[in-house]
Length: 253
Ligand SMILES: [Zn+2]
Image (tube, rainbow, N blue to C red; front, top):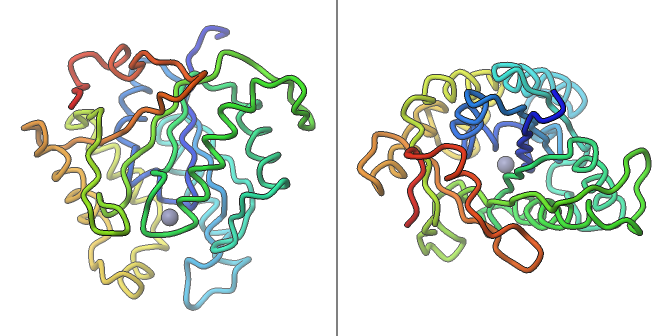
């Protein structure tokens, strides 16, 4: 349908989106939105036993399966873990992806997070949402489009910045009714349960996501929530599109 609204959730690695904003994606899907998930990398460092090309092949399938839970599409910009750079090549790829999807709404990683890949991805997504509308900024295959999409930053994965200061979201989405779908999407990333246990000491992949959602739910007296901060800089839309679309499920702090 020509008037179907599209949401694009972009993040550094496969499974970041599932931790941070899959509940909100599921709610938008239930309102008829088309869902796109894009990762900068295919997660080549996400294994201690498989070589990069093998773990990437597995993780691309996992990420596509997760997007498919919402009838959505998965895209990957094929950067490498730990090497996501704010450089011309990656900027051009990210703008081209936004132009391909033509989203009404973009969900980006937090500008400050425990891992620099997440922070560079945040800057890339922010820039791509803006530059996708600039006609003289040429990318192969896809023309510029306007208006600039609404842009929200998801929470950092630890819900705090690198100095330990809690990050306070300005928009909270009650995802109680979407929690089972969020779990189902995260569970698609089966290869990561063992990896996270070794790397981060998180011994239950799904439970870590549930706990994070529970802590956000506490902020509004709901069981589970996801937090966002809207980008309100010059040229970006100022109205709260999430609130307009999801009504009573959205709370502003
Ligand atoms: Zn990540």
